[in-house]
Structure formats: structure tokens, C-alpha cells
Length: 283
Length: 283
Image (cartoon, rainbow over all chains, first blue to last red):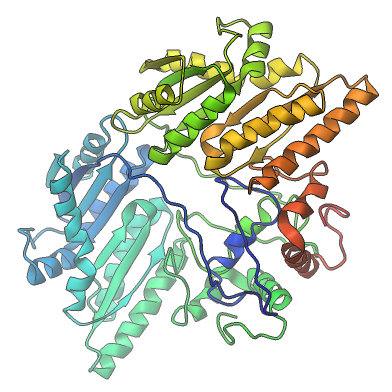
């Protein structure tokens, strides 16, 4: 629904469509600043074939980052997820699964491609210094392993209040981002367990703090900003998938730069001249 | 480069990025009406694993269309390409490969997924009435078969001047589109061999005519418009992948409707108030 109250439909039911401006994608992710989405039609996809799963452990998280870079140079696995030491420890503390809390990082890969993709992921992990690598074709065993990753956020949330980051960097800069987050955690004296969709270069450093402690809260907020600054310094983004919202609006300007901000303002002005929609947000 | 001469960079090197409006996708496909693209950075992807190939022949092209609908309900093959009788005959006439020019249509599928995807495509084809189905794991044999599809446009171009259509319809409407194109060809007394990326519902009816014959040319131009009208009547698009250009501009208005056209104009006006960029195009 546009600012003047008219309802339009954008996009369509075809798989491909290049007729006219891509207005559907302009509105998706505009977070209510261009219109209100009152109806969305989603495409269903068939279930993919059963996936094979590979798990690898590393002594240091930076080595896991290097393994991700190596894997993504050659392959496109269906999933490639990372948990650092603190994320593994949080899962073990809240819901013990027999993971070794002494490891530096865990990588979990899945493949539904033909051929020996999981074996090749495992080899890349070994070459990057993995301590332990295991592969399974059993879907239930694979789901159990991926379950550890899925439990990480609720488990870390038992340890304190969590500001969930969502930064992304170009694949080759993944090890640099991981080191930068470790440095922020030290400097701000704040726990930042890291999980991430590593194959996308998209990470969720979990800035964890005691919300009852004003000093810890201030340090956590500074750490949250520092992680975004680090991602931007590496050519990355402040948000890979979750959006800008209120919390990241100030950093959006840093990412886009003045010319793209001006372009953004012109589109906002053209579609919502009275500033009715989500007023005060973003720009 | 914007209308005022400023150069901006849109998009970035991360795999995922939802910071700000999706301006990159707004400019891609705007065909020079919002800015001039002077530089593009493309992402390289690793080679996919070797594909297995399936070929199926049908007595009638509509049966091939029904097979595509059945396949896409269950699977997402890497390729699913269609050639109708006239396209097969044109290839055999120009560059004989031993295809039977008497068949009504040919479907070519490829899969690089784990499991038995090509076998399942073959079964769906048999259930839809395929006369002959063959599967090969041999990449060279697969490439030879796919080569027939790739040669179709140059072979048809030997037979006359070709207006290449690029319509798309929702997957379930594929058989209806195929029948509609046959009807247009009859009514306009114009040859329209059909090839298509059938798994996307994206077809290239090849409107073929003698450019030295003014009446044949007029009929071909009418047929070209009729095919777009048929796609729109089926909930489809006038262009799946090639763009609007000059030839389809009039039909763009039919597809978008007055409200989306007005939205399009507002964005054009905001970004190019003096109408400097690709003047007179589209809207």
C-alpha cells in the first residue's frame, strides 16, 4: 500500500521477469519507508535431496575461517556454518551434546550435490589445520550435528542479554573479520560468541552482557558499533540478512556514503513526499 | 553514472547485503533510463559438478509441456529445455544430428544434484506420454544433446528473418502458452518454432518470416504482439530475461497497469528530472 493509500501488486508468478523496474526488490527490505506490505505470495520449492554432512573442529577460529575461504574457492555447499569456542561452550553448558568445549571452532557443512562434495570440504578443512573431521551420509546424524548450530543463539541467551550482530564481509576477508571481533571483545571486555553462515561471509557475533550493569551495557553497545565498523573497513555490510531497523540506522550512512544516501532520499521523497511512512527512520 | 553526472557504486562484494534500498537491482534492467552503467563487477562461481542428462521425445508439444509441469512440481533440475517440432526440424535441416524430424517436441534435462534426479525426470516424461526417453551420465554425450538446443536459433535464422520472443508464464500455464503460440502461428499464417527454458516457464517463440514480403512482415509483427498478449492473459510476462527495449515498450504498459506505471514514472522523474537518460523510452 503506497503512501497515498493505493494498493499495487509488484512481482508476479513467473520464475523470471525483467519487464520494467525491479520494484518488488526495491520495496522488499525498505522496512516500511516506501509502502506497507499487506500481502506476500511466496514460492514453494520441492524438498532438496537428502544432504550429506561434514563436521570439522579447529584449535583456533581463524583456521576455521581460512578453511571456509578454501572451500568457497572450489565449491558451493548447501550449508557451511561456523561456531566459535564460546558458542560451542555455551551449547555444551546449556544442553550437553558431547562437544569438546576446548576446541577453538566448529565448522558444519552440508551438500546435496552430486559427487564427493562433503569429502572435498573435509580435505580443505584438514589442509587448513582441522583437528578432527567426520563425514556422514545419514540424514538423522546430520540433523543432530546441525542442531548444535541451531541451538547456539538460545543457549547464549541463557548467559546474558544478547545484541545479535548480522555483519557480512567478502569471502576472502572472513579470517580478518573473525580476528577483528576477537579484538573488539578484548578491548570492550565483553563476551562475543560468534556463529555464522560462513559460506555466505555472513556472521552473527552475539554481543552478550549483563543488562543490569550500566557499564557493561555501555561497553556492549560500543562493541556492537565496533563490529559494524570492522565489517565496513573490510569492504563488508552492517547487515547481511536481518535489516537496518533502528539500532543500525546511524551506521547505514557510513556504509552507503553521501551520494547513495542522496539517491535513497530522492526515491523516498518521490514515493512518500509527505513523510507518512515509518517517519524518522533511516535517513 | 547518474543523470547529473555523478558516479556511484551500488551493491558490493558480499554474498548477502540488505543495508538500504536495493538500488543495484533497481538500476539493473532499467535499460539506461535511470543511469549509465560504465562498470560492472561480476561474481565468479566454481564449476558445478558434472551433469547427467536426460532426453525425451513427445508426439505432441503440449505433452512435453505437461511433462515440464510434472517435473517442476517435484524437482529443480539444473536445466530443462524444450524444442518443438519446427525447431527440431530446422536443426536437422541445417545441421543433421540424427534427430527424428517427425517428433512433436524434444525435452532435454540436466542434473548435478545428488540422487536419481534425471531418472525421475525421465519417469515424469514417460507418464506424460513421452515416446522415447534416454539418460546418460557421460558429460560429452550430454553436451552433444544440449548442443542441438543451442543450435536452434542460428538454424532457424537460416530459414528467414526472426523476431525472438522472450515470454514467461507461471509453470502450471506452460501447456496453455504452447497451445496459444500454435494458435497464433495458424491465425497469422507465420512459422513460429518454439524453444525455451521450460523449467523457468520462459519461452522463445521464434517468429520467422520473409522480410522482403511486406504482408508476411506485417503478419509476423502482429504474431509477435499476439504472443505477448497470450502470455499476459496467462498471468505471465512479456520478457523473462531479454528486456523491454523499443520493440516491447507498448506492451509494457499492458503488463504493469496504470498504478505501477505511475510509480515507475515517479522514480524516473526523481532520478532524471530533465529526462536526459535514454529519452522517450518506455514511459
